[in-house]
Amino acid sequence: MKTQTLKPRIADVGGIPIARLLPNKGKQPIGAWCFMDHAGPAEFGEDEAGMQVGRHPHTNLQTFSWMIDGEVLHKDSLGNEQVITKYQVNVMTAGTGNDQGISHTEQSVFPDTGGSANAWRGMNMVQLWIALPTDQKIERNFHHYPKLPSWNEGDAEFVLTTGNYTTPSGDSYKAPTIQYSKLIGLDVNLVEDTEVSLVLEPDFEYGILMVVDGIEYQGEQYEQNDLIRFDDIKERTVVTVKGKKGTRFMLLGGEPLNQKVLLWWNFVADNKEDIEQAIEDWNNHHPRFGDVNSELKRLEAPALPEGFKS
Image 1 (cartoon, rainbow, N blue to C red):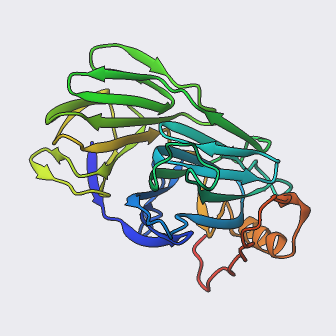
Image 2 (tube, rainbow, N blue to C red):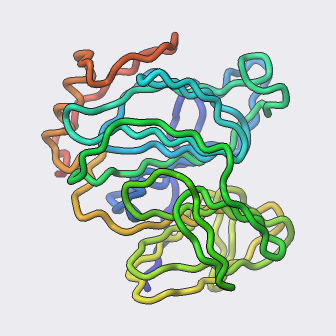
């Protein structure tokens, strides 16, 4: 088994800083997880609007939002309007092919702006993209998951956000989250100083994303927003990590896709030409991306840079 460490780069999304782990200096997806952002933990002042992401498109991917704390209003071109709150998942599917696509907006909401009465005026969210298998005809859709499998082991709390997971002791769990390829997403929260054993299945690729504070693995200390990547797993393997009370991380894994995964701006494709087509269609208001009932600004797609690698 090979391991490597990825460090985040800081980007701006909708007016707030986020830590981006993928894409990262040419590193490949982890299974079909091709994009990893962590926003927060961040608290907003009374005069701050929080995250405000204007209308933008997607192709050949799913957006996967895991809300650890805070609330965000999602609106999309299918007509969905859904507030995602603590310990919930939203999955939006853009569909596959040049006749498909979706657009949406995302904005923080608080008790006085459409959120719940006890909404935190802040955010701690992991937002991921899942590359869709382009050899499948997949229609655009949206799903909201208010309840997910959860359990305790010792001094750690677990939530299975997607996929199937069997613990080292043999207990099995299955999340209801829609999938088009085999994936695993597991949130782990340490309620006391403790160590946790995690199961890695053969033929999957994995990453451990540090969400709050860091962990110790094989004698090395990792910081918040670091990502440990695991590849070439030949047999079922159990890895053990240590952390302090309040530490939180996600185990993300999946089977590699049998295709290229190219990313530019908010688009995914398996070839350069489809990305160029998506840019042209979006900037020319092609109906494949629909419309969103929102007053937020419509974002413009930037042109592909010279030398874009395909």
